Length: 432
Image (cartoon, rainbow, N blue to C red; front, side, top):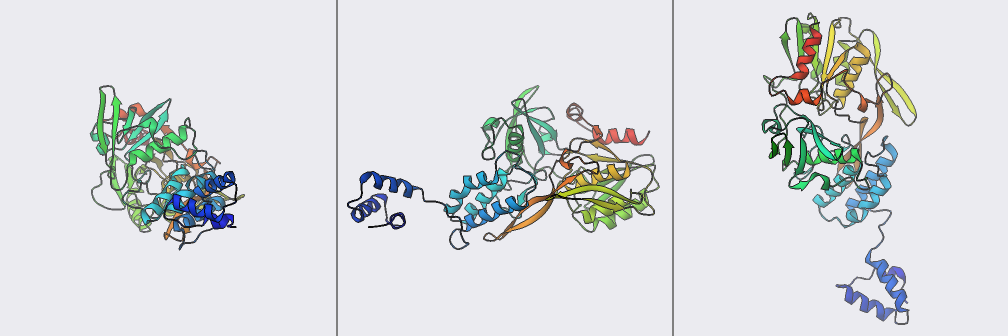
């Protein structure tokens, strides 16, 4: 008599042929038992192990799950467990036959973490853009509505009339309340809904999101192309200007990952160090960077050896320090931040506040969690990048919750059709 494994592994061109063959091999088997076998065979169990040859997407999904289990130092913000997330996707992964399907499974896994810092090292044209680099609008779910809390200057969204405080009604024709949430997220989760909305409004690498928004004058539609970096006179890693007498303004141009930045910054500071105040603009650092670049910048403002950021990993905690330069700047330091101050940009901001007494002015930052590490997914040949160390201010506050000392509210930002209210507030402070 055929065994359970024999029956479930029988290959037939159609289900009816399969059933006939199975009945012939199990002529005296009770009909009810046969029905139970067929029910079980309709959804074959997902194997605990797989290989790149047999089930490449499932193999990579297992590797991603295990990396999160072992190394991810936060909990998924949407409330799902990594095992629930794996179970949600395992059958789809086992059935994936093409590279695009394979990548989509892994992207869905990363989406399930509801963490803007977690991402894959590769993408396709249909992949979602990264946050905050790929978005021009920061949106949050509040009291049943999706509210634009910051619209990036120079973006098509701002040019089209979108302003802080306006409600986003739909994206790509779909009502905002119908957006796909991370698996197993509560429909009432403010965090999950805000996360999903920001991903949707960022669009994909191939297609911009189209939104309908509502303001005081009614509803209107706009295409959200990624915002260009704030206007610079050239492509330098950082620029220096003097917006007021004896006040130097240095803008970092999304270059905290470029190892040539410290030398460029040194050149600018040699010119700026005689100013009464320095304003450091970190509002164009969405791509983050590395402490190898960030520490030399901070050294211009530190005196002696001081901590700038705390780390915690698997019960071990340590303080990362910066050694100040002998010729460090001793005047007033103001740092500008907003939702496009990300990762290492956030680290430099909190470090300068703790170690150099800087005053932070702007909006909440990107709130990207943790220090990143890469973990290989062998079949697709990409990495999953995860926060593998928790990060805190020197005083012990989680870095992702750090707020500016002077918060520029949404009404002030919304009213600024021209000018820069964050810089204006910094200049008032610097000139005191």
